[in-house]
Length: 201
Image 1 (cartoon, one colour):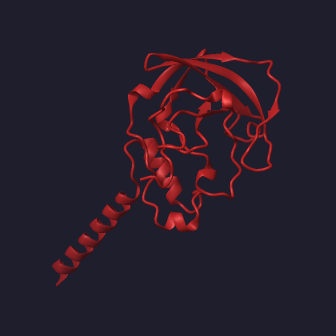
Image 2: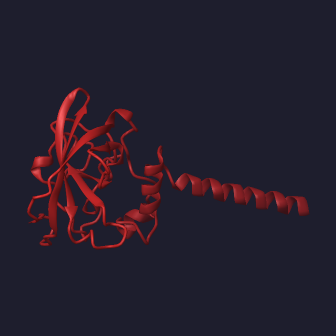
Image 3: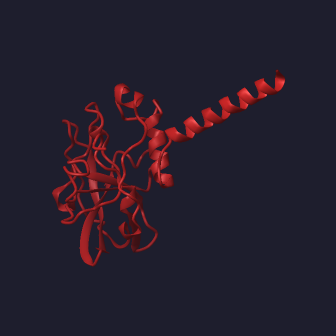
């Protein structure tokens, strides 16, 4: 009888581990961490209904071609401005610099911003905000564009990994107030990397 109990306990443990492993999907560490965050009720932007059935976000397949080294140019004299959001909220940002880079043989530029209200919080002193629009918006990706988190670089170059592009929280839940991507950060190309539109599986 004892061997049977041991066997059943092992099977239960193995099945439980397999189910837990199945819940956290993702090809890369970034994808697994994001899926774990969205599955967790304490950190997820999902509605309770969507989180209940959540198994993982839909991502473009990782592509090293979308990891680029950009030339970083600091813009120290820019004036703060109120960035439009999906609600009446108007947080103050400043254009911190400009990123110039080559992607698949073409040259592009993006502005990178700093949230003046966020940098006073511990851990965010060097945080930068890189929002962008591209030609997958409204098709494979969220119509309002996507974001990439960044930190102030030490020199005049910065790596941009579009595979780490994620959706604004308001793509999942109307209760959030999300910055609207400035039109000057529109890339006239398809960025087939990062998180896809929610629900278009």
